[in-house]
Length: 193
Image 1 (cartoon, rainbow, N blue to C red):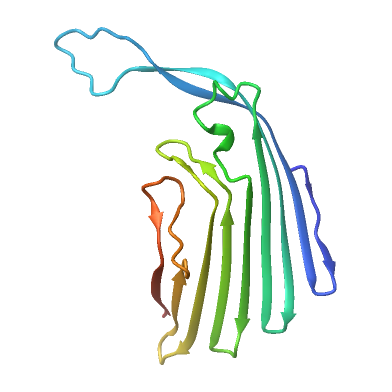
Image 2: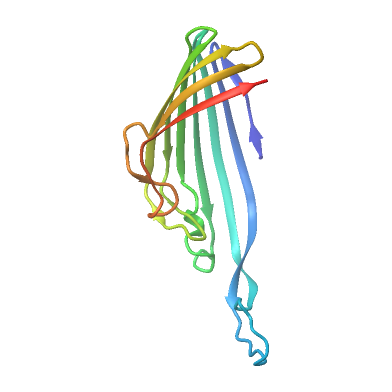
């Protein structure tokens, strides 16, 4: 990290940060032709690794926190990431696009009383070409909601919550076209003994 600053203006807290990852050396593998004796069996193709280039990773991110009321808070995050290279054609496929360029999230939480709380979250991830077995996927957005109830038992404290992820059932892909995420509901019970 090269710069960070916290600022508080009335009920709003802001924390912008700049990162410069510097140049990074990247290696890639290449298949090697090897003749094995007939009595030796190899399950893996031998490979050699070579330096294929440099990449520059720079990032700006910021977080906003705003307390609307004593019981209600909004938290928002934004990041912009730039990966560049003079040798991008030599780097593993899609490396310079291996993370979403612009990403955003927002969370609104509300505490109704000592036992009940609820939250709403929005997430946006920029288009990405994930490395490895990933494929190019477009920008995705999702909305989540959660309601929770705390309770006390004779020998334990607990919380029962229900969350709905991807509330509007947008069929989006996280890192590959075969990884489609739809709406799902989760019920969670936590007990502290």
